[in-house]
Image 1 (cartoon, rainbow, N blue to C red):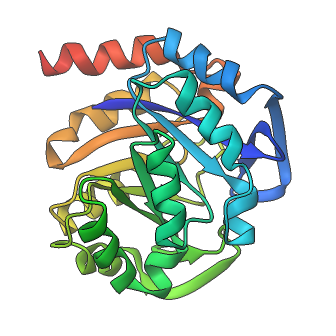
Image 2: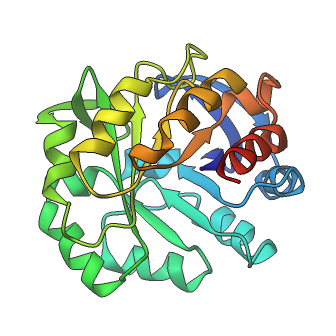
Amino acid sequence: MLIIPAIDLRDGQCVRLRQGRMEDSTVFSDDPVAMAGRWVEQGARRLHLVDLNGAFAGKPINGEVVKAIAAKYPSLPIQIGGGIRTAETIGAYLDAGVEYVIIGTKAVEDPDFVTEMCRTFPGHIIVGIDAKAGQVATDGWAEISSIKAIDLAHRFARDGVSAIVYTDIDRDGMMQGVNVEATVAMARASPIPVIASGGITNIDDIVRLQAVAHEGILGAITGRAIYEGTLNVREAQELCDSDVM
């Protein structure tokens, strides 16, 4: 299982939100490229970037920062989400060295778009499913749809999606522990590997996820915990690696 540090971008800065609320953010760095280097030094084997402005605007806003990180660490797989609604945006990110693009709101509004993008960019498409009480949220979590998260995962089961990033909004940034049960349910609902997101607080959460990783859990995204020091990236990754071996 991969430990995947998150870098959330707002106005060119590295921030963390609570439950996706832009008005409840903490700035951790004004140099996201240097922050990426910090996690690389701690042994991160993938980074999770989010263009928060882009998620609300529906188009990339912090794209230059993303490209700068990709250029600085060309051998590091990067996944990016937030405002990805067109094939042109996806192509531009992949051309810049990003490995995976995360389709969220567009996956809900136009599922066929995901199918098409998986054919156009095979092996590079991740679907982001953000849920509140089991229902899918869109537009930077500002809207709650009538679609069940598990039903959406079913829809993409045979499209060639590389992974599903499943985020429990109620727990995101709240340091209340990861929702293991919902994450496992998502993994069981589809053959697509699942990346857990939201609520990871300390090494105990990693232990709990690692114990069920065989269900189809590829990795765990962590943000506030590593920024506030309640989880160490290197320690967590070494735990996952030692369990595999």
